[in-house]
Length: 309
Image (cartoon, rainbow, N blue to C red; front, top):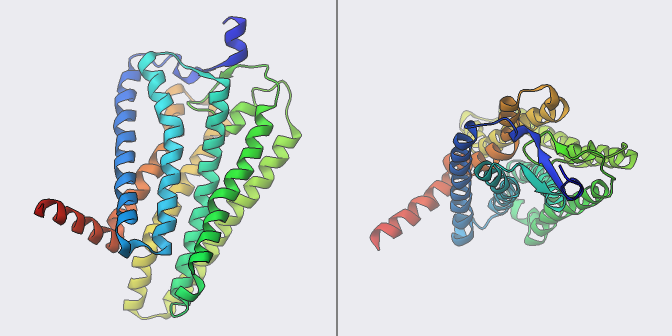
């Protein structure tokens, strides 16, 4: 590798020995990404055009799905480009951009899931005061807290990572993540480590705690309620619970992958990393589309209109 390439370009080593399997992965990645765009776009359009879905719950869902779509788009087109050209390279600026979007995707997901849990909590515990509490202003404030504030903080963490001097130029992952970039530096960064710990507490640990606390209280309440009321609570909360569990599991896999990826074979390395950035953006709109009655009804109305015309 020449000097100019070394100074401006990073190499994804995971793709080095992938061989003919790369073309199979390219097809799978393309189909999965197109399915993500189709599923996400369908639910987002339904929420946008159907006024019956202009409620806090669906506004937050719109943001959650959009966040997943942004996270996918930050990673998968580049992966498909690498697989199609057999050139596992990325510019330093491109890598830093991926770091920012992947970080924002993760923390915004947890923040949005926490806000959605709060929305469900209010709807179940204070149904008569729901519209008084979840005012348009309150919804905007929650959207700011769940979207813009985490993204702004992640911009700071990305900036710190981007200022570290590099001594290594090989990324042992299929996309640029914060830990991967920091590990390339000539020396560790205590500021980056401290910043990362604080961000993890604020935007992962705290949201998870609030989500679990909300559902513990909801479960306790439902156990005291009638069978019909319990069934209604489950129908209301099940999409969010499934989504939360799904994202938490893939985040756990991602944590293992980030810590121990150097000991994992390339094929398994790819599979583990795919969990985090592919499955949640693909599955979340599908889960809500299948499990939420209002979205199903909205979809049916649109299909009927199309058939009638």
